Length: 452
Image 1 (spheres, rainbow, N blue to C red):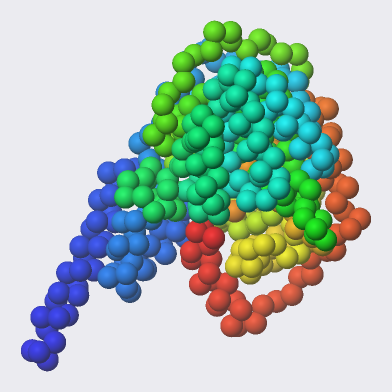
Image 2 (image 1 turned 60 degrees about the horizontal axis):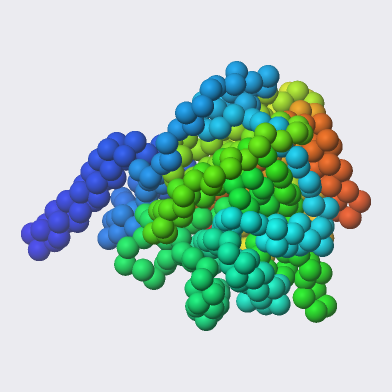
């Protein structure tokens, strides 16, 4: 007994120190974690402190001190509750913009190339992936042509996406005079915070006046597919108006955080465009609140008639899942569209517990035959979201993401037609009780589901 006492005492002190570090850092940095995530960290620190503590120090932070200054303009006191909520986050108000939704990859490609070819003073591009394929080659060629005619071109890619791109591609861009930065590179000694906080935002912004955005990465599978393989279903759009300037302001913050040289203010501010109201909604570690998550939860409780949602990965936290279940139980008709098999099998496995709970509450779940990468949600007839966030905890609680909120009837109707056109080819999710082993495996996987 005496032989083991010092070891037990040392082990107990390690556990105590680990828990103390967790509590102190959580309080000092005002980290607000969902209960399931907090419980997972505490249990890990209790059971495996020698593994869990280094993991916590590397990946445990969720919010970073880097934040752009709040919107300083006039508060609009909007006509819609969502406008007021988003402005309360310190973000820009809704403004009229001209919007084009892209029905398919061909339209998305044409709109993207049009923007690359028409930029006059500055072109800012942020993506998670640039494909090492003919489509990616075409994008790089146009970027270099843009720079050759005197436009300042800045290219920002996430550190994970950069690993998929051969180094010679970045060297070619730099040699052509294009400024390139890698956001939070995985192999660098210094980075913009924990390496699990990825920049998943997708923008092309021309002259602070026009923006191309949505769910597509700049690779062949998102636009035209490859030989014998159909392109993935996805949603993008382009717009002209002040929302592009709001996105450019966010790009500038991301660019400087990645080490890029700041841009001077353009001489001509973007003119106020005609069109329906649109609002820019970034989310991520640089925002005080979990903005897109808060928007979705609040919208579930405000919804009265319907909710249409399409997403490639569906691993919601308990708060969003509960909000959707309660909305369905009080009569909101909810249709959720997800791929029957996505390109992330662990996410497919982890989602089934939430799908069963939602199905029991009356949610209609449509399984799509091919890979869907689109991300959009519609509430009633006057509110919609489209952008880069998936309906999973990684997107909503960890990643740098961005979305655009639509209030106009035309844009919402267009998104509705696009989503509902998926119904004929889909199959309904069949509710089945899980076996004991699967139930335990789902619970274990969901304890780290926010990292999927």
